[in-house]
Image (cartoon, rainbow, N blue to C red; front, side, top):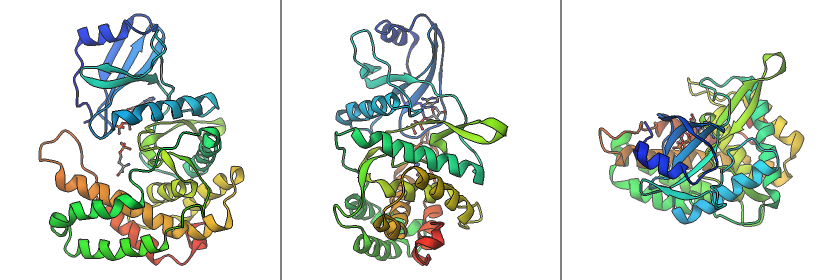
Length: 326
Ligand SMILES: Nc1ncnc2c1ncn2[C@@H]1O[C@H](COP(=O)(O)OP(=O)(O)O)[C@@H](O)[C@H]1O
Ligand SMILES: N[C@@H](CCOP(=O)(O)O)C(=O)O
């Protein structure tokens, strides 16, 4: 459940009075999501998403996220476009929280990833990277390699209760990942999504019933970082089966479609296994932290950190980039 902040009818109507969107027709909370409160909104002008930004997002960073989405949408990326109020400002306040309305994207995210989803995903990711190339404002990755040791320290006290020996295994894995991490400037950087999981990618049926990407959402982890790291996140999130096995067919489809639009440099290809281990530990650590810190009865469903321990182990044992589908 991700409606942390309730919005009353009166507050909503007063808020909408500042927008040129016409009469309110429908309004409902959206249960999916983790970070923010999201509402589906229908007005005389169409469908929109109203987001109230909750505590994990630093309000000072919101203009960067909104500007990035505006930039990408202007270059043809199917991402939410922030809607400006009549004074030209998209970022506002509602129920005491920073809030914005964005365009609604059609489509559904794949509950079960099929190989046919992976090529369109790879193409969409490459287009995102290319479209972001002339967005010049930098936002460092707050959940990049520098954040991982402090995050692990915060999990140290209770981590072994989640799985015996977990903290020692993560200490060793993290030391190896940081030692293998590409040096500053060694790989191409740009604007990355950094959380392009299946629940953030919408599909519709294209010609002949094959899925096509209809929208990319949830840019609130987006940042300026290694472009190939986004691929590593996707390989983690899209290419494992429920039995824990790595589906190299899915990975190959994703990587090949990406490279048709943005071929990877030799150094990026060589770094991919380390980047995949980094992406695995990043999601393992945030999930572990949330697992330990979320109080019982909280409205949010915790995600299993150990799923990413299995992925981390897989990538640690992988025999070079070609075994990952390159
Ligand atoms: N622009 C959008 N168009 C259509 N649906 C959206 C849009 N943005 C969010 N949603 C809906 O809201 C849900 C939660 O959004 P998400 O951005 O993932 O939330 P959170 O940041 O809280 O994790 C999505 O699964 C989707 O159903
Ligand atoms: N994708 C992350 C959690 C972030 O959730 P989102 O709803 O903001 O995508 C994970 O699976 O750990």
